[in-house]
Length: 470
Image (cartoon, rainbow, N blue to C red; front, side, top):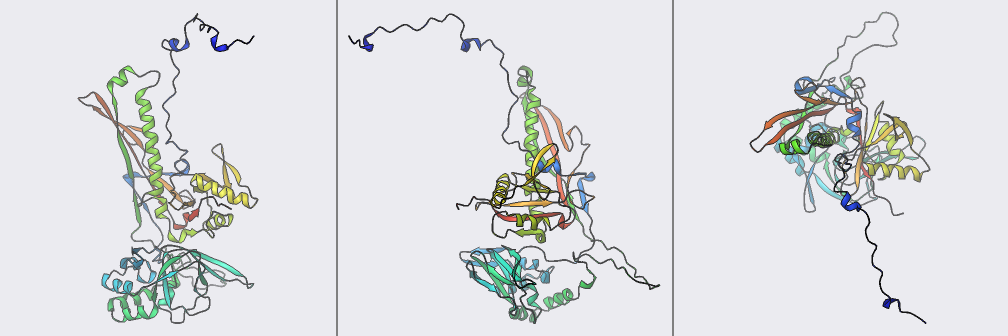
């Protein structure tokens, strides 16, 4: 006989015979963690930069006198499909550096002719006459030449703001010693020698400037553009030795300490009643300092006045050969300076480096840095820094630097011995208790960074970090 289970009497739930855990928790002392914070990162830049004591709040970088001029990039304005060069930006050309007649510069800018190009288009051909300068408003252009054994070799990769053919404006016999081929679609502006000569003939002030430029003592420079130190070597007998002196820049750059600060407020009731097991003031202060240090590292990378990305010499900025960060790109970045100590890249960029190495059957080295194993290339640590920005088109930058005053590298600047100093270069000042019973503390840190010589810092730009669908 089959019995319907639905008709059977339901058994009563078991009767509770002891205190439940939910009620017991009301009498228990819980174990609490200290407040956690997602914003905290490893901050390798702050940990690895050598910090220089900066008394007086200013650090002056004295250098040998240099005749190198016009090393900056040129900026443009866009009006729909029309692109124009900003007249004053022509002063970035070595030939026009220091020339400030806006009317004449405007006349030169008006003579610049726009040219749109597509990928694969040959813009200049090696061996043909060079009669114009090209200013790149947008796009990537590869320069190639013929090597000693007849094979095609890469010379450089140029991008937005770069130019080529500057010597063609004054040299009637100039020839292109490389070919320039567009790797992407883009736009450039060209100024011909004839147009430049036309403006020059009607501008006496420009003629005087060009004449002065042509008379610069180029024969008394080293390859870095510094004033030469005369000397004699390999001689015999008793020839008259040259006299010399080391000339200095008359207006050296000065770095003033920047500041990050905030006012921390804690109610006296919180401090009086809720100070165990964790000290509320100490925890509030700890997290506030962590946030200040994160902001400090961000400013050291991105600040327009002293940030490393904006202050790297344009001669030390290079482009990737194909987009992703290949071993060849890292080698090119590495060879631009002696004694490179550190690479810095966004964590996603480091992942892209790993993919490119794996695709070639290579594996990064690992080196010990402060007791922690970190990836390296050619023995140089590759450290993460999420303050390096990633653009909307999934490109970023990789920094390579030499560090320390003794190595003429990159240094961090700070001043210690501050009143009520809490950490080196960071002070916490008691500001009092207001009428609402709120305690206030002023938390302040001072910092900056200096690049002692231009080749101390290099940047690999426009690094493609998006994963390929291949």
